[in-house]
Amino acid sequence: MRKYLFPLIVLAIALGYMLFRPGDDASDIEALFDKMAEAARAKDLDGVMEGFSLQYNDGSGVSYPVVKNIIGKALEKYDSIEATYSDLDAFITEDEHSYPLAFVSVWVNVTVTDNGQVRELIGSGGEPERINVTLTYSALGGWKIAAVDGLDGERP
Image (cartoon, one colour):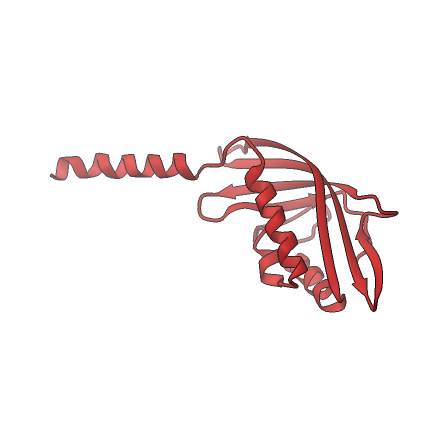
């Protein structure tokens, strides 16, 4: 019995890796963005932050705690928040350690209601803003946003 135990464990690990490894399509990333947009509408900070990697660090040096602070202030300040995205273009590859990595270019629009007035935080003139998002993947947590570049919108 013992001689079969080790091969079964190796097989189980290999199957688990194959089953939980992301595919080459962007449907899981779209699902993540949908979940985060819904959490923003519900003013659920933890739900929005579930989409961000704890190792988040963008080109401006912004880290996870800073992102959490910015989003938390926006959720508190505005009466409602509506986030939408379109034309998501994803390139899924691997990093130097063979971990899944995705580079996403997407149009984003975030509007808020502030004392009855609708304003755009991301996007302007009714047009969305094109941003670039880098995501990392783990079998336990799925896709997480590791960096965002190209944001020029108003900040809370």
